[in-house]
Length: 411
Image (tube, rainbow, N blue to C red; front, side, top):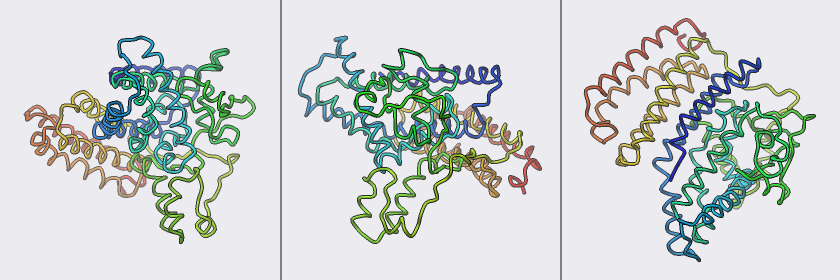
C-alpha cells in the first residue's frame, strides 16, 4: 500500500508550521520562487510517476516470480521489519551511487539543486529516477519480499525522509548515532568540501557509519546548500534535464568513441580529457557564494503562487483518480502539467517572452476543454467546462493587473 498520497495534507500543514516558525524566529528559510520551483519538480515527478511507476512494479513482480529464493509470508510481522531495514540498505546504495555515477546523478541532482533548505526541499523530486532506480531494489525480490510489503515499506521510507529537511531541529543526541536526522541530512545537502557526498541513509545512518560515508554537521563549518554547478533557473523541466544536457554535450564534443559511451557511467564529475581541456568548467568560490535570485514584483509572485496552487489542485486530482485513467488521458494530463509549470518557471525567471508564454498556456486551455472528456481525463461536464474557462479568464485578468510591475514581463 502506498501511504504517500494520504500524507500530502500533513506535508502542507507542516510546511505552514515551518513558515510560522520562521516568522516567529525572525528567519528566512523560504523564498517564494525557490519554494515554488521545489514544489513544481515534486508535482511534475508525481504526475510523471503515474505514467512510469509500472516500470518499477512490473520489474519487481517479474523478479519476485522468477528469481525469489524464499516464500516469505506477508502476514508475518518480522517480514515487515526485515523488509523495512533491508529496503533502507538498498536505498543507501542507490543514493550513494546516485552521487557517485554520472548517469544516476543526472536524475538525483534535482533533489539537491535548491539553495534553500526547508520542508519544500523534501518534495523536490526527480522525474527520471524511474529509469534505473528499480535495479537497486531487486535484492528484495530475490529474497522473496512480497510486492505489497515492498510498496508499503518504500512509501514509509519516503515519508520518514520528509521531516529531516528542516533547519529548525538541532542535533538530537544519541538518536544521531542510529537514525537520519535533520542535522546529518543538512550535511548531506551541502556543497562544502567537508560534507560532499556523505550521509546517504534514508532512515538509518548506521549504513554510513558502517561504510565510512558519515560526516557530522560541524558548527565551525556552516552548511552552504545547493550543487557545485548551480541550476540558476526556476524551471522544473530544465531542473530535470540540466545534467543530462551537460553529459550529452560532453559526449558529443569528445573525439573518442569510448569516451562518448563511458562518460555516462564514470564517477560524477568525470569528463573526457580533450573536453576538459577545450571546454573547462569554472569552479565557483564558496566564499563568494550568492543564491540565485531574479527580481520579481510582489504582485507577480502572488500571481505565480495562485497559478501554482491551481496546478497543485490538478495534481491532487490526478493522484486520486489517475490509476483508473487510460494512458491517453494521463499523457494529456502530464503534458498540460509540464507546459503549465514550464510557463510559470518562465515568469519566475522574468524572461522577456514570459507574457507570450502565459497567454499561450491559457489559450491552450480551450482545446484542453474539448480534448479532456474525449480521452477520459475528466468526464464530460458543463461544470468542468465552465470551471476551466472561468479560471482562464480570471488568469488573463490577473496577468493584466501585473502590467507595469516589471521591466520584462509586459515590456
